Every structure is written in C-alpha cells, then in structure tokens.
Image (cartoon, rainbow, N blue to C red; front, side, top):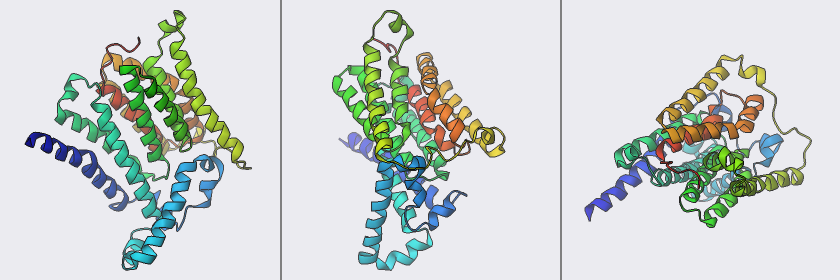
Length: 333
C-alpha cells in the first residue's frame, strides 16, 4: 500500500515540483540580456501584434488577458504585494512566467507519459527514466534565457502531438489520429512549429518500401495532417491582414559570421547528436528521417531565425530524447 503512495509522491516531486523550481530559478534567479526589456514592459509590446508574431493568436491572447487579470487582482486584492512584485519585474513579466510555467508543467507531464508508453529496457527502470526526464527538463529550462510568450505553449502542443503519434503507432486507433489532427490545428494558432508534428509522424510511419508497393494509406494520413496545418495557417494570414512582412529579417550571413550565432548552432548540433547517440538503431533511422522531413523548418530558422536563440532547436532536441526512450521493433504495418 505504501509503495504506490511513494511512487505518486516521487512522481509529483520529480515531474512537477522540481522542474517548476528549476523554471522559477531561471526566471527570477538570474537574467540574460534578453530579459531586460521584458522585465520593464508594462503590457504586451506592440511588435507582438505585427509581422510573424501577429499570427500567434493563442500566446498573444493569453499575454494580454492574463496581464489584465493579474493587474486587477494585485490592485484590488493584493496591493501590499505590489512593491515587492514590481521590484522583480513588471506585471507583464510575471504574467509571462505564469503562462510559461503552466505549459512547462503540462509539457513535463506529457514527457512522463511518453517515456512510459513503450520504453526501451533501460528506461523501464524508474530511476533511469527520471534521469532522462530531468535531462529533457534541463534542456527546456536552460533555453529560457530567451523568454517568449509562445515557445512553451508550442512545446506542449508538439509533445502532445508526439504522444498521440506514438499511441497511434501502438494501437492504430482512428481517434488518436483525429486527436493529433486537432492538436496540429490548435497549435498552428500558437506557433508555426506545429508543422514539426507532421515531420515526426512522417518519420515514424513513412517507409520508401511502402511507396514502392503503392501502399498509400500512410500518405493519406500524412495528407490529413498537412491539411490540418495548412487550413488554419492560410486562414490566419487571410484574416489578419497587415503591411508588415512575415518575418523580421534575413539573418543567413549573420548566422554564419557572428560568434554568438555559431555557438548557438554548435549547441543545437551537439545536443541533437547527443540524443542520436542515445537512440537504438531503429531510433537513429527515425531521427534521420525526421531531420529530412524537418528541412523546411531548418531552412527557415537558418534564413530568418537567429541561431543564438537556441530555443529554436528545442523541438528537435526533445525529439532525439523521446526517440531514445522508445522501442521501435516494428515501425510500419
């Protein structure tokens, strides 16, 4: 009777409390050059509603309204905390922390569920599984030196999509495929990384031999996911009309000449290689296919992203860790 209770307590400590404390330290224990402006911003800055940021509807909605709710609660019910809170950042900064902490904890819970799906033999040991889980958590936390209002929302949806891809692989239940499609639709309103769920699904299920045999079942499933991404993506751009471009700038040259950006690129490559080395042979094969299907994303972050913001590599790094945890004896039917 005590053992299940101990397991629940340990799970609560290692999956929720300890990661949340790490996250709290990253926001309030130290600050990077990126944090200065957000700590002084009183409300969601105007640029969040311009250019590519304007299409991130869910994060922007939460940023505006959570800040309003927090301001109301502090002014009306907790005025004695105002001076203390403002010494450690604006209400907007605290709101950003709360939003990100909420989705970070949800991401931690989803990771735990993924690691328990069909773990390789070594991960069946709960202590080893917790170490792998904390490794993934550390990667998420350390990359919060660039705090945004959308990344952790996108990571939660991405990991949820990974979970339903793996459950669909296990049971081939149409409901899992439908839930994956719904997650892609919703996550497209958070960030364009929703497309990486299509890349992960394709990496797990697509086999060149299947194509040669004219078995188009997987192609139809992939097409369903592509539609789930393209429809809201196009709809957002038609409904939110603006004169600004779809991106801030082209940083191709800067990414390969700035020592900071080169350091960020090296971090992403080495972290991904670390996950690759942890994988079984089947996992390595899937990761290679995943990188191939992720080429549009990789090309875009090379052109219009900054490698120094290593958060851009986070979905790929987490994918390597997830693939290292799973058995893939039979990937295709």
